[in-house]
Amino acid sequence: MATTTVNTPVKSPPRRRHGSAGVLFIAPFMVLFLLLFLAPLGYAAYLSLFQERLIGGSTFVGLDNYVTALKDPELLKGIGRVALFFVIQVPVMLLLALCFALALDSGLLRLARVIRLGIFVPYAVPSVIATLMWGYLYGPDFGPFAQISHDLQLPAPHFLSDSWMLGSLANIVTWEFVGYNMIILYAALRTVPGELYEAAAMDGAGAWRIAWSIKLPALRPALTLTLLFSVIGSFQLFNEPKLLMKVAPAVIDSSYTANLYAYSVAFISQQTNYAATVSFILGLVIVIVSYAFLLTANRRRTA
Amino acid sequence: MTTATSTTATTVKAKRVPAEAGRSRRSPTRRRSTPLTIAMLAVLAYFLLPLFWLLVASTKSTQDLFNTFGLWFSHAPQLLSNIKATFTQDDGVFGRWLLNTVLYAGASALGAALLAAAAGYGFAKYRFRGHGAAFNLVLGAIMIPTTALAIPTYLLFAKAGLVNTPWAVILPSLISPFGLYLMRIYAEDAVPDSLVEAARMDGAGELRIFCTIALRLLAPGLVTVILFTLVATWNNYFLPLIMLNDPNLYPITVGLSSWADQAQNGGAGASSDMFALVVTGSLISIIPLVLAFLLLQRYWQSGLATGGVKQ
Image 1 (cartoon, one colour):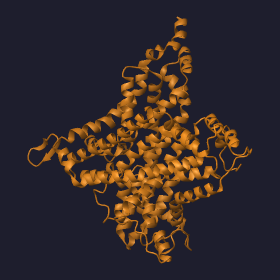
Image 2: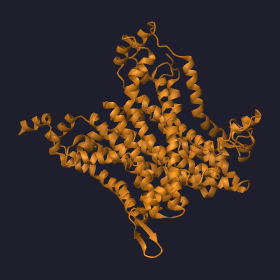
Image 3: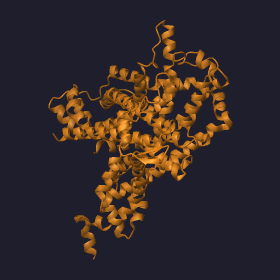
């Protein structure tokens, strides 16, 4: 008997033998996951197939809501705007995060620890508070930028005007998340074994060459991760425009972003079924874009 | 060597020194770049600017907020009376919001971390039928945006009578697919199979092994997941905004934004004093999280490394 128990670890069946315990460990998570992730998704899918009618109450309408949504200019405008936001803001943010991470990792900085923590600190600030702060800073009357340009007799920058708004939002989001992405990239850089740099230096590679040929490839998984989180973050942009709406009501309307639109359909015009449809479509767009990125990242890695 | 360089940085970097020294005229000490340092300090200034503004602004009366230069203190600093006013406005509702936030964020973070740790350990150390499928299902859910889930969750919770209760905010925050992913990777390395096997031979049950041995080894990963769920719940706005309509249940984010609305709508009337309260309330509410991050640095940094490196 004793010999069999001693031998088993080598061969691998022990795990299977205790497999039922494994199920118990994952059960609490999986049950809540089903209830809080899959059930709402399923419920949204179900609701999206019905319409509330004055006569007959809830009626099955098939994909009618989706047809309406895909032709809904407000929704399309919202999705288009967050897509534009994503295309502009995310590359800027990730590029900055990458530069900062490389600078920190280069070992050339004084006060590296202070700089690293200082750039990261905004991540701990709730986006609501970040937006309130920047909202005041942007203010055309009493914001410090307006005050300074007034003293210098220059025209005040119109941060909250229609043409600047997306950039102003991008600035807030960038301020919040550059540090977070920087830390992910920096942590990945730190795991590159020192021997690799030694070998490269022996072969005569300079600092830029090392950064390009060793550090960037080593960063690929971390970059994929940050990109993935950024896709999810930008497409569900809500808090920042929702709060700036109060400061600039003429610029940000209730369909400024796709998520704001979903919110206003659900809670202001109270069209439950259509809100479920919009949520479902928005979720689908995000999943599709995320998978597209993952697939291209993986293909590049194997190619 | 500047003293500001972190000890971890120097120990890890020590290995690389020979390589870079060999590259740079074999100098025994590390080179520091002043231009790069200055550039990064300018970057740092940008990131600290709004926080500095907040600190300055919370010492001002509403009047001074509008009439004095935003980035410097006024002649009559009144931080303490601002703090007092913040806590006494509307029968001390701000204190309630803080407590609510601590309750929601604390319960969610602890619960989410424990659930993720147990499940991560289960996926890392056991093989059972449906193992791969179940894990992939959860992994796929990392991409499902929480806000797209929030409205359907609200509709479901409304049916279940959970809307406008603390559960409405806590329950959806308990499930963290990314936390599970982190914990599984962490458990694979941190809990050696041989140790689990040895404990089994000593007759310990699976649950006992988890509670007495594995959980302790998983502690650093656990702290990482706790911290990140804590931030996510502490900063959450969308979910409590749609789930709660009783101001006494608001967390700090929804509460402050409701004050900001009042300040904005009040114009020059009595409620324009609200500006100073919003600003001071903002300062008070970011202090705990900033402190938590500064004090628990090594945990979240190692946690992020785990998540970013392995895929």
